[in-house]
Image 1: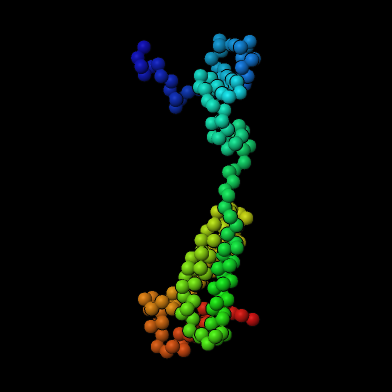
Image 2: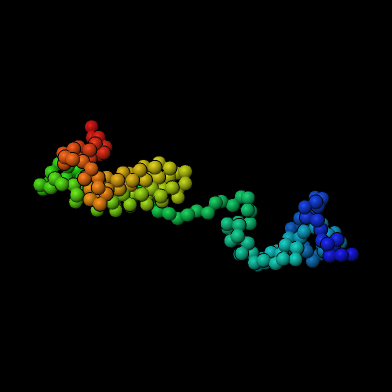
Length: 190
C-alpha cells in the first residue's frame, strides 16, 4: 500500500460521531476502554488536563479561554481604560475660557494668537486623543467619541487660522474681514 493510499482524504471524508468522555483520574483507572477508537477522553487530575494523548497545565487552559474553561460562555476581556471624558471636557473648557477672556478684552489682551498653542495641543490634540479613548470604550462611549473628537478637530482647525505658514490670514485683503470670518467659525452664543 502506498503512502498516498494510507493518508485520509480530508476533503471527501465522511463525518462520523465521536463520543467525548470527561473523567477524573480516579474513575479513569477503573473504566479504561481503549477498544473504541471514536472515543476522545478528557482526563483531569487537578493540575493537568489530558485530551486524548495531549497533556496541558490547567492554568494554561484557563488563560487561553479568558479565565474559564467554558469558551462559549466566557466574558469578553475588560480593558482598564480610564474615563476620557474629564480630559476632553477640561481641554474644551480651558481653551474656550481663555479665548472668551480674550474676546471680552480681559487685561487689555485682544489678539487671540496667545490661544494658538492651547488650541492646538490641549483643545485640539488632547481632546482628539480623549475621543479616540472613548471609541475604545465601545458602545458606551459613542457620544463621547463623537463630541470630543469633533471639538478636538474644531480647535485644531481654529488654531490653524492664526498660523502664518498656513496662509489663511494672507488670503484676506482686510484684517477686519479675517476677524469676521474667524468669529463666524466660533459657535454662536445666545
